[in-house]
Length: 330
Ligand SMILES: [Zn+2]
Ligand SMILES: [Zn+2]
Image (cartoon, rainbow, N blue to C red):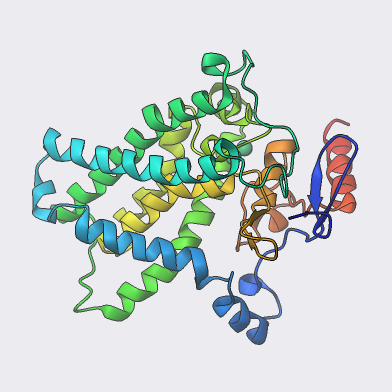
């Protein structure tokens, strides 16, 4: 399928979607109840497909892929190894699926790809001179183990009463409400962690590793320096103060673990057949990789708008970004 009706390509091979980056109406002022309802139930919308899918995955991971909580009262290498193995399999399944479809098998060529070039397979910037292998290395050797450490710490804390735990049978409404909160915790946590990582000394030390991926692919998502992994996954620690159930923690942890795959596909849509495409756009974060100084968050909470770093992909936003740069550089 042709992407001409959805966007425009410039002479340098950058394809820009016609649809501008926007936030849902969750924080619109004055409130728009009608638009809010529509956004909540639309597909794609707040619930479907991703938040429901992540919630179902969290319940399944807790029920079928996590041992009973008592096991975690004391630390055991055996169970730590099993949780690590389970997370490695999850990561390979999700990052691998996105990668193979769009980059390995190149099922839709460069249709709907923001940058018509393919990631570099001969660049000394990357380990093994190959962007994908480098990205897989940082994801699997540093990212997944650090994600697992946070998860084990919280499971230990729930098991020993150090983290406030909800019983779904006693508090079904609170249990349900925290599910709705997790996507917001994820996004706000990501924004502040990401802003911290752009503090110049931390950027040079850690976050610059992630930003080598100017033309990202799915595996670029969790390709970060270990210091960045420690900061990025630290949002999970909020469950030391927010009353929750381990399912909520697993929901946040697995989302932090695998959602960056979709956030870095570099594609706006997945072509299903001649007439159907799925919107998988994370253009906001693609622009962050291209310009470094815009869109530290993406999604529902207009943090970048509030803090003056929003870029919606339009030429006007480009001008505004350049004006901010001139002001900063005197
Ligand atoms: Zn990124
Ligand atoms: Zn960044």
